[in-house]
Length: 528
View 1 (cartoon, rainbow, N blue to C red):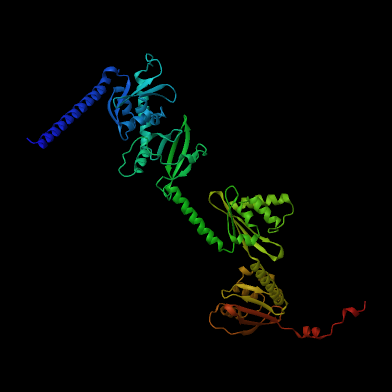
View 2 (view 1 turned 180 degrees about the vertical axis):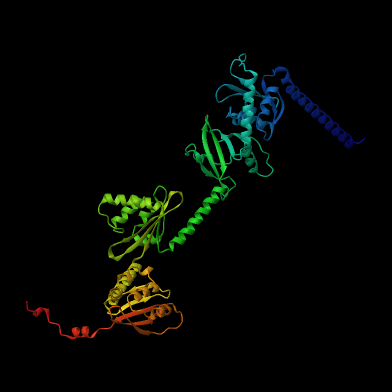
């Protein structure tokens, strides 16, 4: 046997001895841990609450301790379940337990001082005991029915919190989530990076520090951490509860879409109103100005900053009065009464007035009701229309005056036979009943009056046919005799638009001609 062979065999034997030693040590260590784990069953009562953890895995626990875990949130590992059950009573538990290996043991007092969580590090295992600070011998007697009622109420509250369609959770003062319903936990797990195992406490979905200045009962819209565009905001309601804060978050997607649609609709209306020549002012139910268009500025000369500050209706009208942009009332008391009447009429949509202002400016003002108690006022400049109307009215009055100055009795009929107009000579000849009501008088009524004051003649039937004829017509003449013996020359001429002119000229007798031919004495030289 060579020297190299002897050395190789020695190395192999030494390695085998090392492996055997390592195996025996590991078995001894496992046996020690096993004995430590099983030793709890011997030195603990059933009512004691003791946990034994190897890392995040529960390796042993008393029955009371298992009942505590069964009532905890079903999330992640055994250690996460324990955190969810104890973190509300022991807010510092999660941070202090990290020093257990270095310190060996520690006592963590509950928030209200009624319990202590005793933590011990034994042979690589964490032993946690939940101790009641009150006398161990003291206990509260409770009958079966009271306990059953409490358990039923607890089941109802759990079912309610787990099935509500919105997020509900509680946070400690440092922002740690101490309790959450299923909707919150499900959404929090969905926000975790791919492959990461959910644990307790769940991640904070919202930056709740932004809600510190929020009044209880009010809400603020917050977005999820990964929602950079804030496409799915939530309305978060904070409510202080027993030193912690209870939060409720409701999805606001529909509200945001509705508000966006409303903004777009308002922008569309604003662009539409911007091109209107009619001034528009809309006041809300509190009678503050909420919307106006550029035409209102040009019509009223009101400053933009004044309208942008949303003045009240009374302030708006007072400013118009001060700028002489509305009719001046007799006194201020009557002015206030007019304002009240104006507002009341606008509510029912009956307000409509013509405002005649200085400089020949005339506005037509409408008041119309809007949904939710709002009212709108429309200002239309009708100065040109009123000027044209006045000019037409003056021309019509002039034409009527010229028409009345003619000695020939003239009447004009429409193509349907309605009497449109007649002069004073016509009224004197045929009587005032002939023109008492032009809208109710037709050619049939007129010919009856003519027939009653003239000797029988067949031309009145021809006149009725001539007036109603739609074909091409030519002017024609005839004569009739009045009952007083005078001859009446008649002419009937077609006019534009199917209208017909009827003219009557009584013949002057020889005696009347002689009287008219005699020179009249100048009244200035008549002897008295």
